[in-house]
View 1: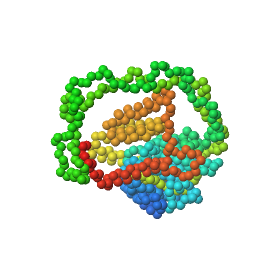
View 2 (view 1 turned 180 degrees about the horizontal axis):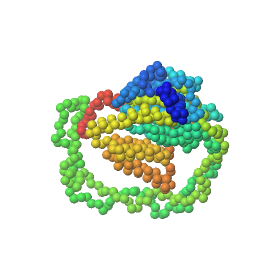
View 3 (view 1 turned 45 degrees about the horizontal axis):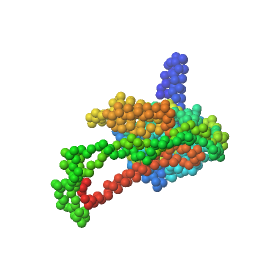
View 4 (view 1 turned 120 degrees about the vertical axis):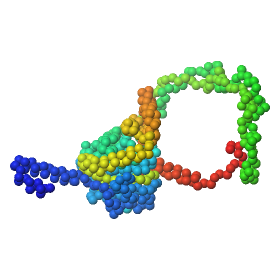
Length: 555
């Protein structure tokens, strides 16, 4: 093309020649700039073997496969077996600094069999000098950033975790992005993007749409915050012995009334009750079934002496009742219960004691996060599902480059999968498929579930939404249930109830911790429970049937 333009340029006027040259130069510059902005790209068009290193650690028995995505010819890296741990890593040509300019971490995941309990996230690893080897890659291998979907039990989030070195202690601490977005619940390809900007901001995108934005240095966005609190409670401060935290106390001058009987029962017999006429005192409520016959295979030695099963006495069905008649009970008008002195304001009340604040000896300031360089990309997961397909792993130095890959590599594939899904639903005559309106409703409900104020209720809300997606006919009921949850939170806040406690069991809260990712914090406990349940179910299915009891009264 360059040669063709040069041949034509002499035939143009001077001004147009200059314009043509500028256009060619500009186009050439854009091509070079775009190429330079792509730091790493893995489309998995060819087999990963020889390029990616599978961990040889004993715990990681899961088999990786180079496989086509269901429904089209695009290949990816496939999780092929259920209930396995997987680990695989790809070294970059050179370590990448995250400290300068914009960095986009992006990859695709398709949950072809859904995701009930498992992870589908990537780890961006520090250089091997930090103490790891590709063939020994495992959960303890030091990483700089962990990013991607994870779902199990109450966990349903797209993780973003920064592992940052504390400049005072030297320990590496996990800092979790607060209130991350939820994992899409369908079986289509989705693209996840984390954009790290030089102004300390991070954005999480799903399918190109920003779902979460935060600032690395804000305590409102990361837990624990990268910058610790300036003051802390004094660990040596002790509550004075005479400190009274009781707002109310029993009235010391109150006296129990003379007519207060603490021993009076709550209920007494109704003396005015009369036995109904026709009551059958001598008839039992149940009798032996006269039509029952001893089974031919009954063995008295093995099964015990056979007894006829009981049935309701037919005489009692037409009578007011059978057996010994007793007067019914009624509430005792004299009952008052145990007497307690009424409460009054405590004149010695000093409020809830708190230790005094002192300067935090571990406090430090940051202008920018001290990102560790990344030298490899790893996938280290434990999942109960197979069919997880990774594709188009990208590291770029420009947001437009990442967007270009989304539009060219992901978007056509995603649209094709959506159309095929619609066609399959139509061919199967599924009248309960989600309408466009219902999909918009559920997308909106997912956004409601990501509201920080509702974080304590998020697992319940997500569970309701997923049930609604599987049973679209109950959409209205789902909306009503979520509205009730929101109203509950609103009234608790309005009338003095406590703000819902944020569940921080899934995040690292020990600011002094220096270990690598604790898998239990991202759903491993739930995965262990699921494995145990599967084993118990298998054992129950294989167990011999219990012997029949010595009597068949309940049969």
